[in-house]
Amino acid sequence: MIIGTAGHIDHGKTTLVKALTGVDCDRLKEEKARGITVDLGYAYTPTLGFIDVPGHEKLIHNMLAGATGIDFALLVIAADDGPMPQTREHLEIIELLGIKRGAVALTKIDNASPECRHQAISEIAELLADTALTAAPVFQVAATSGKGITELRAYLEEQSNLPSPASGRGAGGEGSNFRLAIDRCFTLSGAGTVVTGTAFAGSVKAGDQLLLSPPNKPVRVRSLRVQDAPAESGHAGQRIALALSGIEKADVERGMWIVAPALHAPVRRFDATIRVLSGQPALKHWTQVHLHLGAEDVPARVALLGATEIAPGSEHWAQITLDREIGTLAGDRFILRDASARHTIGGGRVLDIFPPSRKKSSPERLAMLAALADDNPATALQLATEQQAAGVELDTYALNRNLDPATLQAITGQLSLKRVGNTAFSPDHWLALEEKLLAALAAEHERAPDMPGVERDRLRRLTLPTLSRPAFDALLAAPLASGRIAQTNAWLHLPEHRVQMAASDRDLWQTLKPLLDAEPYGPPRVRDVAKATGVGEDTVRALFKRVARIGEAYPVAHDHYFTASAVAALARYVATLNTEHGFARAANLRDQIGGGRKVAIHILEFFDRIGYTRRVRDTHVLRGSPEQFGS
Image: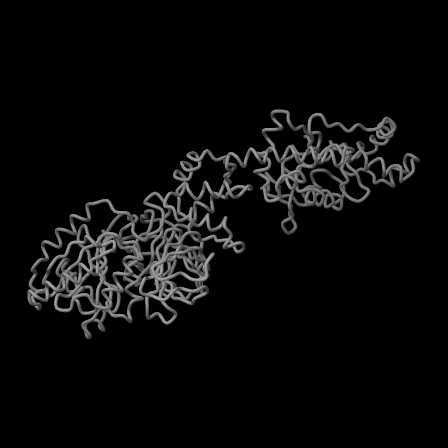
């Protein structure tokens, strides 16, 4: 269990931790000289980890770097002073971070009269009323003499054996991808660069390949210590020190993360829910703030969504825009301080690290934010599939919440979603898309009765332009298999739809087609066919256009028609080249089919044009399947 101290300066936090653990958390010369805590200190027992934070108002940024990620708050109040300004601010921060477990150490009881102690206890009860710590026990201690320390330590040990959610540490547990918020970095002889922090999710072991994020620098875990003891592995909720290869101390800053490569997704903005403290002014749209998240401190602006201000004591949605990229995921807690970093304004919870840039305050988006605020990840996914006819990308959805594959699979199964690759559809939307597909096909037959049907990619756009090709192929598969849609060469059509070639056209086509068949991958052009047969050029051109409409020929280039069987064979050649090399080039296609390079270029450009391939510099990468040509 990670315990964080909280309280006013000079109320004995560091002395108390030393009495509980035997470790002096003040390690800096300045701390020794001034007798005050300046930066975070750490101490451990076999079952407890302590983060000792500064109490001075000017060092709140250091306090916040340690407070995010603790499980248990130890509020330290001196008996001779009672609650003081920083006591109250630290308590507000504990509340905003969602920390619900804690205890109060009433320190320096040897310096206070019974009346002072009694008054302090009354003030503490008033201070904690209506907070998450309202029922927190109060332990009267004197750290210098050891009075009350045994009882407090026993209580903390008892609490460490109870199950506890990871307060403020975002979504994802031990089975999720690993992420650790860095709050310290140093170099050790024999170990190299060492970073320390609280593990927010997942697990780690020696040899793991991870990333320093946001800089996106690969690192390897050489060794690790957990709760300041050598360990083979560590997991979410523990204090971990990682000895890393691949980076130097100068590469690392407090606030960065060590993450599994899949979690590297630094952001400049995110959607969140924000609560403003009751003692602060209303938070207005586009207010400049300091945002504290994990161990990070970054200037930011708050854009309110669907409101012009958040009243004191109230909560609302907002989009936070940051001055620089940071690492965060849904569920992470954060604190907002004013632009001068003197006062805590409020805090909140990250909801979406992939927020939309348009319609940010639409009723649909606000409903989605409410769903994202639900701790059950199925709630947001269900609403997203209901809102998005083109489906929800599961990779993005899972990354936002750091969901492991097993959890994601369980959720999609629970919701009975139609899953196509990494895209999920609601059952109702999937049925509606199928109906829309059939209706689009019928409408095209009515609009162009002389056409044999609709090309696959055009039908996808008519059904839903934003539908991905894999999803459309899956949508089309069932009607094709059941016979509700038929395919003739490249054309998709309803089974009852027929376009017949006129008898005169059929006779002329049978006369001219052998010229194309004689050189299937380099057939003569329209003018050459006309010269060879004595048929007028315009007559040949018009016939070939009509033949192309019913799918028996393709206009590969201007006035250059290939038979359907030749195009199907060429499609298979291109597919084979992609299988062997990952792409097709004009040179290797020419080697396969013979002829000139210019014809091979025309063929590949044709395949790009109709969506069978896409051009990537001087290569052509497969995006369709040969079956779309009736092969």
